[in-house]
Length: 304
Image: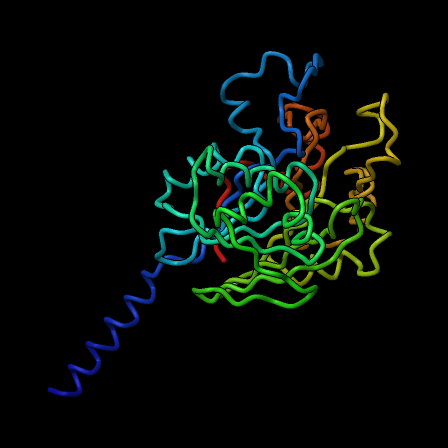
């Protein structure tokens, strides 16, 4: 009798653990800081976009929802935060558990304003930031008002030191070279109970980083990598030296020797409005997909 009862309890326990929802990573946006359509752009890439296309093209950001919870951690607070949180509301997320900022360029922290008194008027949302990023928020308006009114509270990160969160989630900032006018720039290693992801939306060039990106691709299950520009011809009126990023064509060249199993981990993200990878019918899109790479889409969901 006791033996069968014990077996029954074990079965119930296994059933319950099997039904526990995993930690979910959701892509909230995939385009570069200024969004798409971009201000004053008259090119075909922004002309007469349908409502569906406009909805697809939100600024790069990720959300991680912990098992069974109604909260999510955000990675970057984009200018599209209000639209992106509406998506989370549709997926049982009611609160922001915290926000991890990569750096102080407009597409990555401007959404914090949505937490202020004139908007959501949040209460003590934790904002995780590196030391220079923290000082920038503390000493510049209007961000300092968010702190004075306790709409947000700052949590200081240290390079390569992981933060333990609920549900077996761990997050580690990784310093990368970028145009650091106001803050450091970091990528995030997001570790769930069973899988992990690298979120690296901004870097100057792969060769300027002391750590080979291939080591991180091998380590993680999903690698969301900077693909701002497909090549150097997209915006001929601008100097690419002023806004360096690894061109997609450079990444394809660098990664060509990777086995298909590694290339399939790569999800290109942070696409400029001119990037042909935003056009699913373009030759560039078809080429990249044929080589085994993924192109991140708003609404993609992954288990961690």
